[in-house]
Length: 321
Ligand SMILES: Cc1cc2nc3c(=O)[nH]c(=O)nc-3n(C[C@H](O)[C@H](O)[C@H](O)COP(=O)(O)OP(=O)(O)OC[C@H]3O[C@@H](n4cnc5c(N)ncnc54)[C@H](O)[C@@H]3O)c2cc1C
Image (tube, rainbow, N blue to C red; front, top):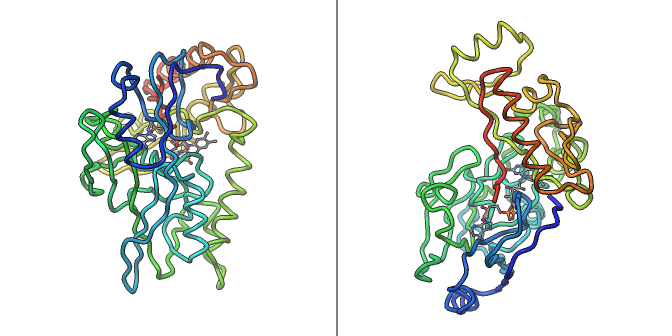
């Protein structure tokens, strides 16, 4: 979010041996701690009075290969988009729709990142971790991670319990594209479609809608898209016939939070240095000098306004600390 916040201690490591030494250190044992990746989904509301841990493990290895698939292990500290670029350069299919998502490999497995019709849990096969309290290594299968929309066991039951050290992804060597998302549909007509074409289209769409993280502080989508019962949706639709919606299974309907926010008149709404990003109302942007309190006041105002207007409670997708 480009906020001026500090932590008491910051520790980086490159290998599991260094991590083990760190977990045995007095500084670690005497302070509360939290592991971060690139910080692209974090909102620190004040200084962090503890130790932030960060991985610099950036290796990439092929761990298994069949005629049709390849399994690749990547270190938690590798930049996610570098992993995507590697897959595209080697003609491995499955990561391309998630081109350009900021952050690192470790967080991809915590957050269950996704975009343009793809979710990372579809390609994750195993997540390798170290338990913070014991220093023991443990591997979770994708099923054990209980992936759901931007959610995993690491955000719920196992919150702050494990450090992800590396992630194994299984990709297809056989060409297969997911082009269901609007701007990608036209690519389906191309006879010589490549992974690079998909990447370039996605990066162009992202650049047109989302703030560039190096210039403008944001966490991407600040809120999750709410999933509501059909009867509530039908009632809303009679008042707002234009409301966009998508089936979410089990009689539930997903409604874009960005539309709810914009239609509530909050496009560009500002509190101090924080604003509802006009090109995509799901994003809260730091216009340059936002204080943490501005972000907090703005996101609470959005939740209250949306609840008042539609009877829907928005939940932050961002990690608010
Ligand atoms: C402009 C912009 C666009 C975005 N677009 C998308 C998008 O399209 N789709 C999407 O899904 N997300 C998107 N995001 C959100 C963000 O990119 C993801 O949530 C990403 O996974 C965060 O990665 P990070 O490395 O920065 O993690 P951080 O923000 O540093 O951490 C995120 C969480 O992961 C935990 N964590 C990080 N590393 C580890 C580790 N090694 N072990 C244990 N826990 C760990 C942290 O404790 C925290 O809970 C966007 C963000 C921005 C700023």
